[in-house]
Amino acid sequence: MEGDPFGSFELAEHFDLSAVKLLPPCVPTKIIGIGLNYKDHIREMGLPTPEDPLIFLKANSSLNGPGDPILLPKASERVEFEGELAVVIGKKSRQISEAHVKEHLLGFTCFNDVTARDLQKKDVQFARAKSFDSFSCVGPWIETELDPSHLKIETKVNGETRQRSNTSELLFGVTKLVSFLSHMMTLLPGDLITTGTPSGVGPLKKGDVVEVIVEGIGTLSNPVK
Image (cartoon, rainbow, N blue to C red):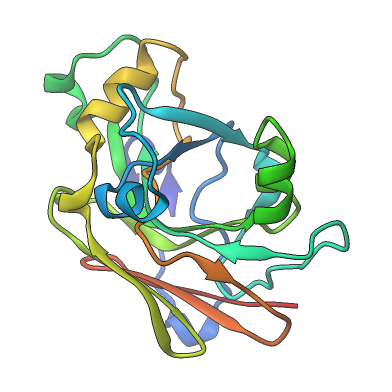
């Protein structure tokens, strides 16, 4: 590639996918998570509907690429998958209106918000449970031409479907989330916003393979070690 993927660029050379190793498709300055944002997940948890987006941050050192292993930490006895649609910011965004969100996005990708559920319940904050190394699986690439409002989303473990929903179930959609966040913090190119997980989250164990599949994007696959 010649140039900047967040600006103008030209593709100088092409490779077959089988000849390359895919890295995380962006390097964010921050990973912003949204909790309780699928209506079916809210019903499943039996919790009140949030009035505003529930926000947490994941350490960017937890970034994990396609095919790279999810590492189970000794500190946790229950690590769970959370399949999600992620938004990739395309240019510096501060206090933008919902009407101008689209022009500030680079695109969308698949995300697995791996979570140490026992530590999440134990701690007041989510930082430890969400930020272990390898707990932010992202990829396999960024789709730049996509309407995120009605996409099928599915998570499989060892080929068995564990989560199945649609982004139409989102309580706060992409444009609302990006605008809301931009009025609180400046969003920078490559930053990731994970839009929440649907119902059906569950545990992972050594030897599992977890796949997050989002319609129009593809499949993010990671083994568990």
